[in-house]
Length: 417
Image (cartoon, rainbow, N blue to C red; front, side, top):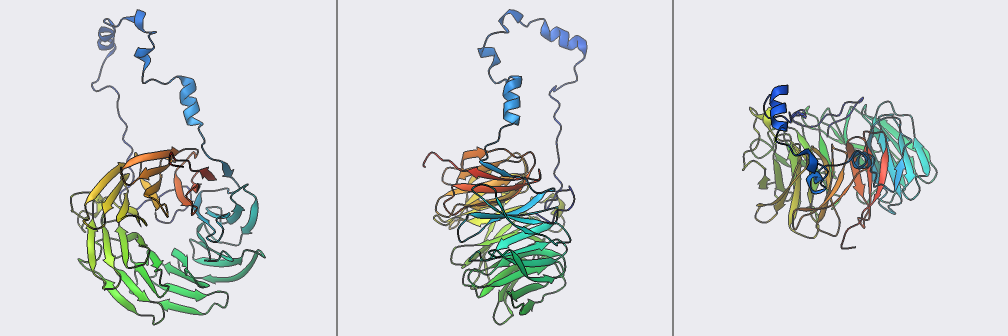
């Protein structure tokens, strides 16, 4: 998902089209309708069996008011754009919003722990450090602030060009960020010692520090992917041209040991890359292998989110048209296609199961069993689209951020628990 501003939600790829369906297949006048009603036996209209499939007004109202959440955090006064859990304890959540504020709050009871103020624009990124001792918040304008969680004080700030992504190092007090001028920044916190990884003037749209902590993979607006050596500051591999994407990268993820990276793009294609060799070793699409090219980019089905399963050789790719595709990593064959009625915003695999969760523009959180392709459960409660979500380690809780100005905590129940 691209940066969000105001009340306008913009996805990669085509604009969402809302189709209005006329329930009458043909134009019917009053006389035609009267003729159709002549054969209706009104005396049997009270038969319960004939009402099967219809909902009463009370049932429809109950469905509209259904809220499966355990807790609602409602301090934001604008769209809630991002949410994360602290990695050390999973007891704190941080949410960033259109109101230019990030809030840290306790998941168990919603108690406010820290207000991160002073931003100039919507807070689109908020991340805890690996040990949860620090929190970084970044806004659309490029202002980044770092806070010490325990003392609730701001300990560092820096301003860059418009922010595209931000991430903490997995085991060191080091923060990385990519900007729309093509630079990738790396700072030691709180000293502020800085290193930049420069590339041609092209937005660095997505990035990920690999688990070894020595390399990072960055995707760019021109479809290029670079594997950077963080110590030396040079690009180890540059994947471009036909090997790269034919449009801007939207997302990327790595497997558990960092040997493979999966990238997604507005060209409707996901690519599997070996980070050691820099070679593309797999290509995934839902249209029979036809990836979007420069000429048909407007018609391509943008990839919105990707991820690796930790316990099975499977990957998941979420598309703008609402398709969640599960692929076999070894054969690259599509195993299941899980269809949503609206565009998928984000997917996340559970750490120790074959269940993958999705959040959607229809405001629902859904859990899918990748082994069977069937939906395990569905959670409702938001009055607008879910823009971000995260799971705790045990996958017993999900925290969501929505365009309805709220964040919610859902207790995830499954038959196997």
